[in-house]
Image 1 (spheres, helix red, strand yellow):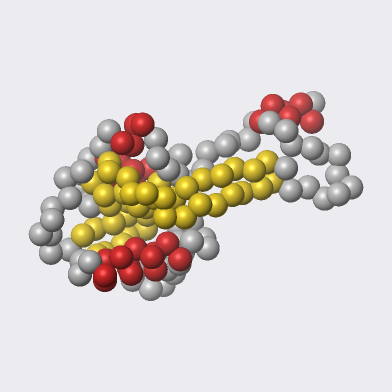
Image 2 (tube, one colour):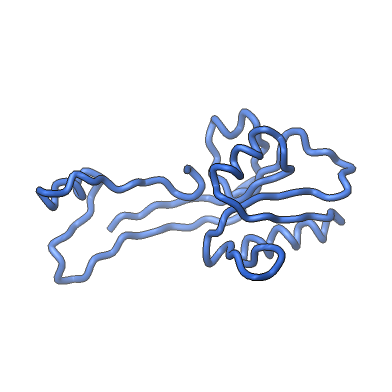
Length: 144
């Protein structure tokens, strides 16, 4: 079984204006934590958490879902006030101020009991089928 562990954090741009009328946050569709619906803003546990934090701090916050690479670019360029969820990396600390982890989660790759597939590392996937040279991506939404 492949198991990935990740911590989701809230990130605020280092240039966050303290007296901003509205703070703009970006994220991606990441069900069930963040889901794009027909409502004006995304739904889900992580959105609910950010909304609760904003209410508690008397901040007016807008949350917009978009393609992750665009969200990261906007955050890196300081064009939004925050982005979530993200994983802490040295590169991100150069332009973003990460919060303490808000959520921790693990992901697994499962096969049926009768399957001969046994995942041990990425190379396992490329050697189980001699015709396949594809290798799995270990990127998560936070490391895209």
